[in-house]
Structures are given as C-alpha cells and as structure tokens.
Amino acid sequence: MSKLLVTREGPITTITFNQPARKNAVDLEMTMALKDAVLEAGSDDSKVLILAGAGADFCAGADLKAGIDPRDDVAEYLRAYTNPTIKVLREMPKSVIAKVRGVAVGIGCNYALAADIRIASETAKFGQIFTRIGLMPDGGSTYFLPRMIGYARAFEWMVTADIVDAARALELGIVNRVVDDAALDSAVADFAARLANGPSLAFAGIKHALNIGERGTLADALDAEAVNQKACISSDDFREGVAAFIEKRKARFQGR
Image (cartoon, rainbow, N blue to C red; front, top):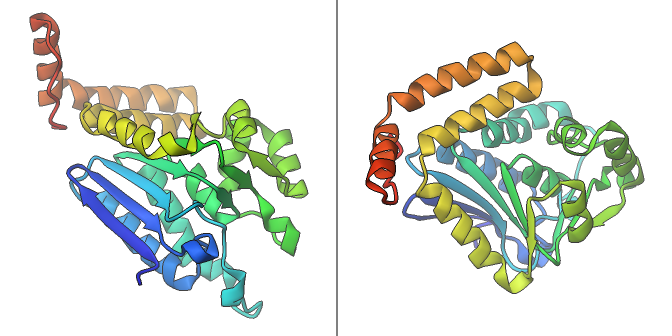
C-alpha cells in the first residue's frame, strides 16, 4: 500500500497522506514522496491542489516509531526534503487547500499552514508539539505563524506545545472555516471547484503578490501588483470576464 496517494479529477489534484493506522504520521519514504508529488503538482496543468489525510486524521507529524537517529544531519534532511516542499506549496502558481480533520500536529500542522486555504472539520486539532520531545518547530511555522497570529501568540503556542481545537483555530485565524465533519469533503470539493472554474491566472497573480507583500515593502507589493495586473489584462480570461459582464452572463474562464 502506498503511503502517499495522488489522484487527479479534472483540474483538481489531491495528495493524501495514507497511513491512517499511524494517524498519517510521516516517515522518510512519505516525506520524499510528498516532495516529488508537490513538485509535479506545482508544474502540471492542474489548477487546484488539495492536501488531505486518509481516515480520521490529517497528519500526526513525524513518525517517531520509524526511528530518528540524532547522529543524522537533520539540517540537510530539512533542506533536501521538507523545505523545498513547503516553498513549492506556498509559491506554486495555483491554489492549495488543506482539508483538515482530526489531528494536524508537528510537521503535519505546518504542511497545512503552507496551504493558501485551510478548511477544517469540527474534529480538527492543531499543535506545535515539537518541544514535547525537546525540538523546536520547523517546516516554516516560525515564518507563517507570527504573520497569522502575532509573535507573542506564536511564541506561547510553540513553547507550551498546547493543542488548539478547531473553534479556537478559527478564532485565531489559523483556519479559514470550520464545518461539520460529515460536510468536510463536500465543502472542500465545492471550494476547489469554485477556484478551478475561476480566473486562475488572476488567482496566481494574487498569490504571488501576497507573498511579495508578506515579506517585502509596500513598494515591492505595488510593483508585484503592476507586473501581475499586466499579465491579467492581456489574458483571454480578462476579455471573457468583460464580455460576460456586458452580456450579463456567468464568465467561462479558461486560465489563459
């Protein structure tokens, strides 16, 4: 049985952590496969990527039972596998949705944080649990969380390793929406379809400009807007959008 499943339905790709008996904890094999799958999804012709977990959980972080040798070069491991995955998730020119039910802790939490949208079921639980075993958070959480919830809350969450339930995650702004567990699949599918049927070139421009704005100056953000708007206004989608507006019909965007 593959520890990572990659499926494609039309313009939507789904990558699923597939070790439900281990709450989808990731080992080296899964980490390597995830990097390859994300790199491929980042460059193919799909329009939306969904990250999900098989069974009742999203991802319980690193699989400690698989064994971690302190003599290994963890910095090299992160640079070779985890960090490229996180960067591509955030920088790929398509929308990434994390579908979270059950636990999303450790690196599992941080894969979700790297997505553009997080839709959680009421069963979802998030945690930066690294300090429980004497580690510090990795996977980009020290970048994402201060921007989401502020330095003080990020620091507190990381040092206490507390578990945050779905309602609190929504209150803090860690997730975009919370739905009943039974409605999670349909809620994500509907949102993914909405993104897939939208002006994906414009969505890619929004994602790129937001990333620039997040780490740059106002001048950087303004320039990114200008560059991406130029691409949008030259697109077939823009012409279709204007025609649909004038003709009072729904636009049929093609992503070009």
